Length: 127
Image 1 (cartoon, rainbow, N blue to C red):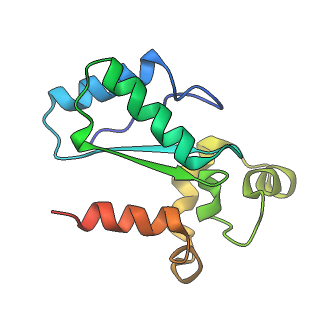
Image 2 (tube, rainbow, N blue to C red):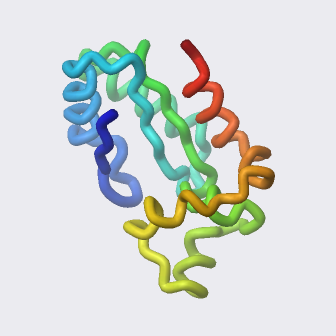
């Protein structure tokens, strides 16, 4: 497994993302999973733009799976909140760098209903 960050809001459609995917492809991983926040954009639009960018760069997108969190990946921490990132920042002094430490405390019963989480499970279980 290899993990990278493409940066903050709006930075996923970039040459850095292409370089990360190219690097992962060269390591012959079975699957490349890209997690991205929707930041209130249409998730399908984000996924299509990412795929188009990777295709134009000559990347094989057959192994690429894009999971768009609506609105942010922090929805995994607080699935009942409309804007979990703002809530966490306001009430708990949360920073994005806190996510790896906190992700082990998610409520699987609540998170299991999220479309993005269901897609993660499907991708991980797909041979």
